[in-house]
Every structure is written in structure tokens, then in C-alpha cells.
Length: 240
Image (tube, rainbow, N blue to C red; front, side, top):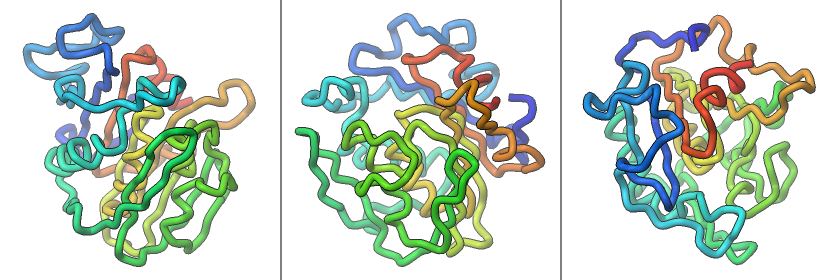
């Protein structure tokens, strides 16, 4: 992660997602990086999501390890807003009802009319468009379309740069993560001027993520790991 620059070491956080079978006491594939006594990951503050009792997507076999959208609204968004310091309010959003594939994936849609420009896997996919460009309900963006859960975000299983043109003086945040962050990125994009999110699934076919962070200085850096992948996924593969 040495090439990703944050304005302050205090702005760097590690997050660890578990799954329905994990809690803070289970053995972790990230064990060599964790100091649970001091609550750190490689010396930086650890946001251990295994502490929470989430609901999971029990009806969709490919998504049973993913947290249900209702738990993001009830727990994850307020928690991240408190830790990262962005002014999230549930009242800023309407609930967009969405159910497919026997999954209830209703998600939050901002009430304010904002505009975004989006690049996915180094290709411009939207310019000066509304919140619909951050979703993929019509399947027109490169994100994984394999389930309703993945279609709630335009760049699921991809890497992207999202610019909120309505917040020209806002902060920037860098994220190296995976599909646990799918419901989080669109919400962050409502409060940050720039969100860079890297989830590299295209090794060996010539798509580089380096231009998304090279030469930039971010206000916040969030390395969002999960027990589904080894540390090299977030500290190496995503940055390639």
C-alpha cells in the first residue's frame, strides 16, 4: 500500500468483514496482520465488522455470505459515518424498493439531485448524470450482473473513480475492497467529492488500477478486507 497516499496516518483505516460463520473469536486468514488487543491491522485502526450481529442474504445461495441490505442501513452506514466523519442521515434518502432473484435488495436513494461522473475499469461510463448511474438495475454498466445484490452498484467486482460534481469542495476517499463494499460505495459517493474503489477481478488482461490513485493524496484511506480473501487481495492484487 506504499503507493497510496493519505493526508494523515490518522485517516487510514482497515476494515475486516467476516460472514455468518465468523465473529471476533474465530480464526482469521488475516491473523498475522491483526493485533486484536490493540484493535489494529498493520498498526492502523481496525474496524472489526465481526463484532456486529448482521442479517445475511439467506435466500440466495451465491450471496449467503453477504450482509443483508437492511443491516447496512441499520448498522453499517451510521457506524462508518461516525468513524470516518461524514454527515450521513437516514433522512437524506428514500428507500428504493428492489427485489429480484428471490432477494430483497431495497437500497437507499438520495433525495437531493446530485450529479456524478464515473469511470469503471479505465472507461468513462457516465458524465454529469444522476444517482441512477451509480446503480446497475438495467445492466448497462460493466459491474457484475450475476445477482440483484451485485446490480445495486454500477461497478461491482470492478474498479472505479466516482466524482460527485455537486460537492466540488468535498473530501476524497480511497477504498481497496471486495463485494462487501457494494452497498457502501454509492452512499459514500453522496458525501465525498471523489471515491476511488478498487476491486480487481481482471488480472492478466491489461487493466491497471494504478492511474486511479497514482499522484493523488486522499483525505481517507479504507482497506476493506474480508475473510473470503487473503491479505494480498487488498494490499497487492487490487493495487496492480
